[in-house]
Image (cartoon, rainbow, N blue to C red):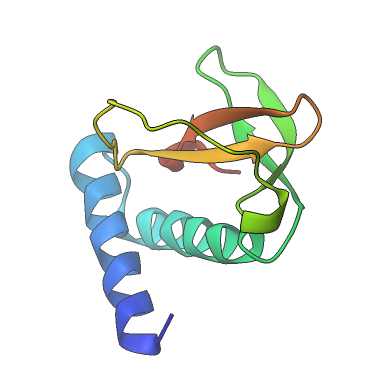
Length: 104
């Protein structure tokens, strides 16, 4: 990903956090950068990360988006949701997701 594309995605994500989650711009930018960096690292291999679940507890996860490590997936009729990050959980060998605003 080139620099302009990265900066654009960080700013779009940050504004989304400000509008939908009520975060300050400072917190929104920090969270947006964490999300962009996490997604980049998951495309390279398995990554350990933490996020806050809906019930308030913090979950430790090991996930990846590396194509060689993903199972074959069937086509999905689901509409893409830009507020959640989908990843392949390597501990349970299933796809999981979390709200991007809840990344710790």
